[in-house]
Image 1 (cartoon, rainbow, N blue to C red):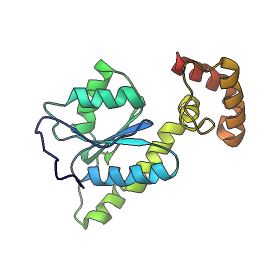
Image 2 (image 1 turned 60 degrees about the vertical axis):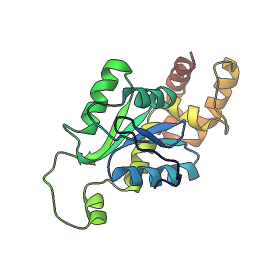
Image 3 (image 1 turned 45 degrees about the vertical axis):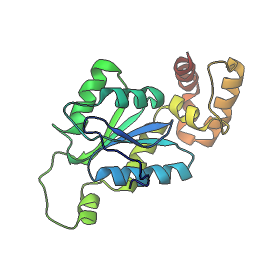
Length: 196
């Protein structure tokens, strides 16, 4: 996974594997590879996912995680573990205290373990790169403001944009996405709130 010969592993630091601005994929163990593959699939669809390899749960590298989350305002934790009592739990607890934000999870959803080939187990527990992409899209596109921040006329909206320009973009984009057609007022309020 690491292509640089200059890489140096630091025990208590998380690694930024792929830089992005739309959603943070915080992954541990073998799920780092799945998250990296998912980020490539998302990039092909115009979503720039940041992938962070979480090397330690305790102590948690709050600095690297918070820097990413404050940039993207959207998180999915990917772990090859039960979603209770692992990396997701630690990150969710920290985010609740430090920077409350939407935080999804890909992992074993409180089920008994099975024996099988790795790829089969990923499918059985909905932990494939395709599952990560699906979760990222659900999470990004469930909020009209997040959708427009990612896909507004091929560019990011900025705080300096005039409200009438923002309104025009929202009206144009909502026509493309049926589930947002009836949410224009909420989308505008949510987007203006996100930009302020």
